[in-house]
Amino acid sequence: MDDDWLVQEVEDKKGVRIRNIRTDHIALLGLDQIRDYTPDPRREFDGLRHGFLELGVQLFLRGPDLVIEPRPSHAKRATAKRPTAIARKRKPR
Image (cartoon, rainbow, N blue to C red; front, side, top):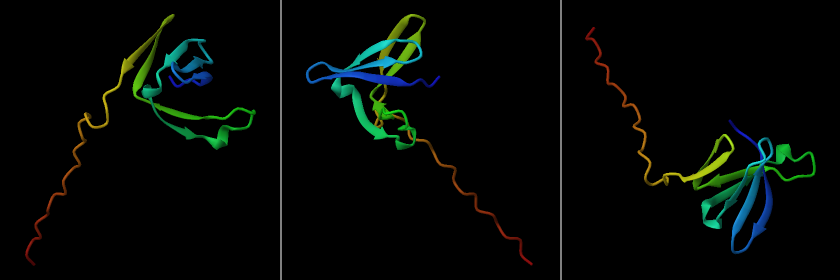
């Protein structure tokens, strides 16, 4: 399920504290766990900046618990094989 998370606080040494708006779970992410931020200007209608955090970890909501687990890096992911084109033989006329 995709949820909105609110960045509550950014601390230089500790990281970024985010809160799940639907469940009220709070996670403290290390700065090295955040890979990138991409703004989403189409949703900036309520005075808040909206966007996407690309994380190096995966957040799992399991009942009252919040579990943070590492994600495999892009380099470690198996590359998807592209289907190869099948050569067709032309029938002689």
